[in-house]
Length: 280
Image 1 (cartoon, rainbow, N blue to C red):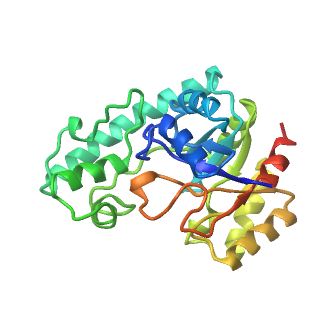
Image 2 (cartoon, one colour):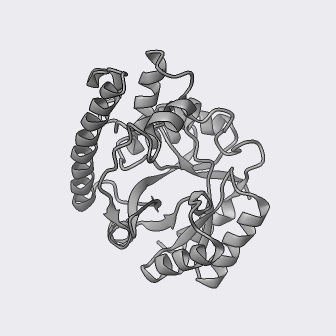
Image 3 (cartoon, rainbow, N blue to C red):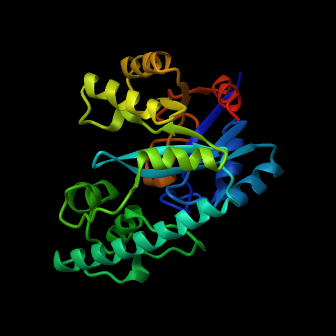
């Protein structure tokens, strides 16, 4: 049994390490396998896999979709996906257009709030990178509009804040079906972060996803308490789902959170990966 990390982000979405850097860094940290799960993009997968091959690190092709669950945004992880599938690439191209339109509206909102910025301010040098709210936060920090990244989200960019613009999301059932259609395994990301769920609602949430074809739950996550981990393992057994785990590594955008270790105590055993691979 060895450590793995099935939830990692790069500069192709809202992380600060390039896909290549992530592979080298993960290996240096003692990991044998990672999944690159950028938000709504697979642009960094091949680069990360090629770098992984150089250092004998297995890199699973993954993605983290933002999906709609009865008007609530939740995140769905897809593992072992076929990144060359035409239906997937078409879906992601539509998301790029949707995000671009949203970004323009957020820039307009920020200007109205007294924080003028151009599109070039949030742009990145990474080709095909998906621009996210993290890029807005970095730009606001660079211009001196906020003291830190957390302030940018807590005061302006977070859900319900003055500069927040909601965007369209694919339905959770459609997302699960898409992941399966492109050869992948569908796992609900960090359910412990969806604060509006009581225990009863959380059970119903997982039950509904399981009935829609969900394969697993992210049961190991840096912000979980021991009680939460036990609860999610119980739900896995109750609804015949597989447990997974990851750090949700974002580099400098999540300070003090490291790949493979989270805040120091996270450990995702390779046995979880072995179980996931039985679904392929």
